[in-house]
Length: 271
Ligand SMILES: NC(=O)c1ccc[n+]([C@@H]2O[C@H](COP(=O)([O-])OP(=O)(O)OC[C@H]3O[C@@H](n4cnc5c(N)ncnc54)[C@H](OP(=O)(O)O)[C@@H]3O)[C@@H](O)[C@H]2O)c1
Image (cartoon, rainbow, N blue to C red):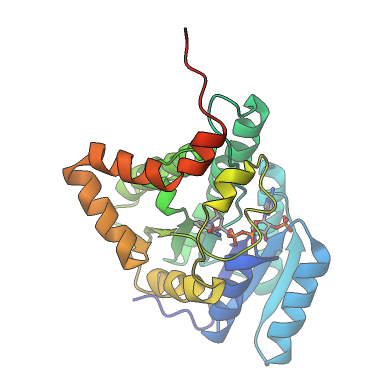
């Protein structure tokens, strides 16, 4: 178990959604939270909310797609609290479009934020986290485990994070530090509205999801327990079991759910 009291926890992508809810939750555990994202006003409002409860928080702007900005974020955490124990790579963007139609720039942009944003953060944070026997954490997705129509750019960026986490874990063997990967299903946040590329029919297939607070609770518990990987909700854990046994069947089931998008925009086939 990782006792979070008095520890410094950096959360990227904390100006909204799961990251903001997780920051509040880490602060409730008596951690010093360092919240980072690009929108300063939202971060400052979050810090004010946390401090109003007598808890500890500091905000700094950071575009995770820049290695220098991640280094500055780590320096900020050290300057404000003198330590860095947990780095939660949560910042993320999505794209929703069929592979055949999606723009190359969208794939690159999603990779820069979701994959390289995490990699840069971990590079900068790792020596300090190791020194404190802390933990690294990634907010991936169910789509980091399993693909679906119109999610190729997003799912590939999340799959890449699982490869990174799995290699890091082998390199960190013998230390107390591990890598926790959280894979939520749908969570009701702004992510779909802000998608780098958006296929309206596919977005319509989006179901009502968990609240950010529900996801944040699971994430914080997973970090405290130094879990390797957590997938929620339960139903999606069952889908992954089925995927292991009958991947072709899961392809068909998932495609059916996105039928509207596929019917509205059939993929062009080579003639
Ligand atoms: N919502 C879901 O259904 C769902 C499901 C599975 C996994 N996830 C994952 O959960 C994580 C959080 O997403 P969310 O659903 O909470 O979405 P959200 O409400 O849109 O929040 C995304 C956060 O990432 C930040 N961000 C985006 N680009 C950034 C950049 N270049 N540099 C720094 N921060 C950046 C945003 O802040 P600024 O705009 O202020 O920079 C915002 O704080 C993501 O990794 C997402 O892939 C979400």
